[in-house]
Length: 155
Image 1 (cartoon, rainbow, N blue to C red):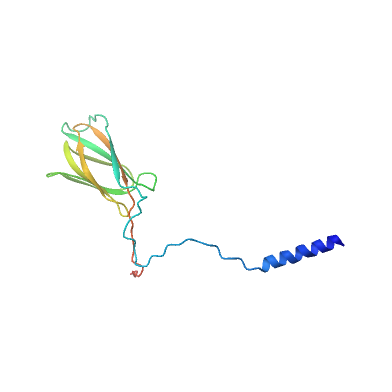
Image 2 (cartoon, rainbow, N blue to C red; image 1 turned 180 degrees about the vertical axis):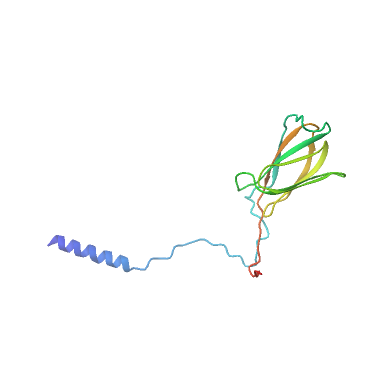
């Protein structure tokens, strides 16, 4: 008799639990009232670069050097497509977007270089090209906020 009572209580409890309405899961949300946020989070890294001096390259002309650019986005592993420009008063070299290393040869001297990509901060700084040497420039671009219009129509 005691077993039947316990069994009956278990069935009633299980049935009541199955029919009971569960409380909605609490979530934390951010409500944006005025469109796109105007400032990027301070926790995101800023763009930066590091030059590693390389060795001589006998295939280069005596007064020419080369830079190999490896560009990545701070939150994405591996090389990422980017546009790299190298220029001074008389020389301008623009490399197209590419998912691999970018090599730019130029006469020895000081240049302004720029690395950019959509959804990332542009990095711009000066750099030296050394005659007969190939140096590597590792660039990390910081993420940037990108907002797309919600009511844009497709054609």
